[in-house]
Image: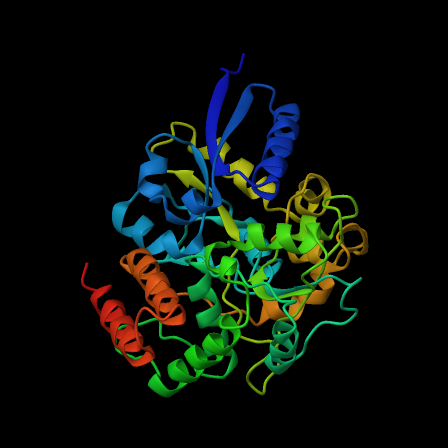
Length: 379
């Protein structure tokens, strides 16, 4: 008789992060009756900031954010998925992944998580208030002058917009210490952000994507969010009082909707688990096209698998959110992932927000940004 096995998982508290994993765990237990997986959850802010090493001490399975992988490698707290995952299965998942999502968890020669959720900054509109998306930032400015724009600027999302716009104008933020920040491009980006920030409600400074989407979908004042992370369930009928639709980002550069800062989440296995094989098998199964286009999306999940993104039935349930933002996701920009990056992300977010709220001059902010980025490689 197979010995009973209970695994603990940690995810984030939004239905998109919690519901599909609970459903997947129940279905997995039907395949392996001796395996029980329970899930705890933490806030979005906690998800973005809690060290993976801390979670790995208490959990077998974890949903992680890809910028943590440099710390993961240095701390040795996660089990490489390729330790127990078959090469042919991993190769198939890599080929089936939207954009750089699979690659975002590959670091130091190993795969540290599997992309079960793909996201980047996209544009959201209320189709009853604005029938078509903005294609240029200038259109967003016109709506902002009429008080119809929301923009989540709570750290780290203010920095994500900065990254997105820098990449969109053709000079992406550096990912290595030997390449300095393009000062002219960074200044142009900050000036564009300042012009928009001066027009939106100051309440945006405290909003994350969920708060902004709630405000957009529950009232009648706002028509557009130009840059925020995709949360596909908001496009479902009945999820909120009003349906929103998702679209590619409005461009500031001349090459269309490229450069959006990549987000999403990956399913990882703790190096401390006493059940590495079954944890790896669960992760591979959840990331598969079968699960991603089926029970995962049926339970508020936002898939990372391209077969799910292309599925007509999945798109029909989510207002064509995946079809209509595919270009932004395929052309998304991958953040730095070195060991000191997470500390830099926190500091840089407040530097940019301080600049937009008049607490420091733009030139001083850019000096501080370069200094903190350089220092982040010395930890």
